[in-house]
Image 1 (cartoon, one colour):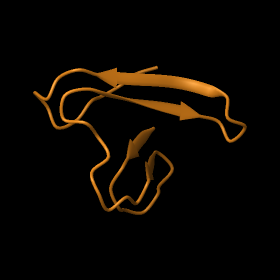
Image 2: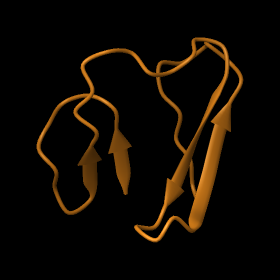
Image 3: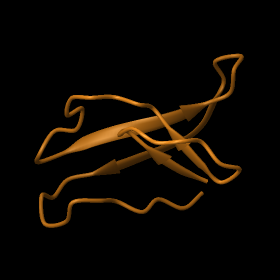
Image 4: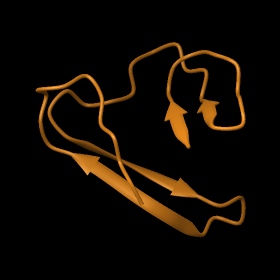
Length: 58
């Protein structure tokens, strides 16, 4: 699954948060995927501004 913070239409494998402003820190940050119940499924973090994206694999 791909989670994107920008705007778009959800598909089976891509979910959009439809945010209009930047949400990521330029140097380091983390994202946590949770079930509807709040249970943590996976956390992905990065610590470099070298790329404009981060691929995380569970």
